[in-house]
Image (cartoon, rainbow, N blue to C red; front, side, top):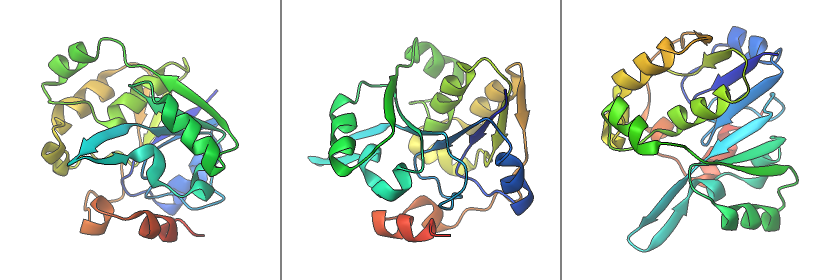
Amino acid sequence: MKLALIGNGPISQEQKAEIESYDYVVRLARIDNFCIGEKMTHLCLDGLGQKSGNPRYKGLLLDISLKNEADVMVFIDKNWEFLIDKNKEMGYVGQSVHFPIENKQKHIKMLQCHNLSLGYKSFLYAKTFDCPVHLYGFNWHPIMKEYGHNHVNERNTIESSPDVFLHETPTSNLRDNDIKYTNRRSFERHKP
């Protein structure tokens, strides 16, 4: 079995073609480099908690049409049962699962960071499939520091893990709209 874990960095057309051949294709929350019709067996989401009393949950940011492209929605870290229920109310037809992060503080200490990135947490989930993990769209851009992630230690840790294969991104440049987006703009970007 083959598994591709897709980050939110750039992916070439050649890489997109390769990804279609994988048995499992695990994508992350924003799925910036995804177009409707491309393969996505699992979609990993986590919660952002509350900011100024306003709930901001990644599990609800994406349009339901995008989420329904995934066979399984994986809610990582906390037990987001209410998000699972809410997505069903919104029309999600696939399976929803919860994946807890064991020894979270141990990982944070090892990576010397303030919190774990969704990319790292999704990597831990991908490792449960017990097959090689091929990484696409992972560039560990320094912007991660602004969100409390140690991009250098994360990259070194993931790359040193057995059976991990990194497929380099075509570029490490990110534009503002790759970082900040709205639900509507996110959906428009994913149309084929």
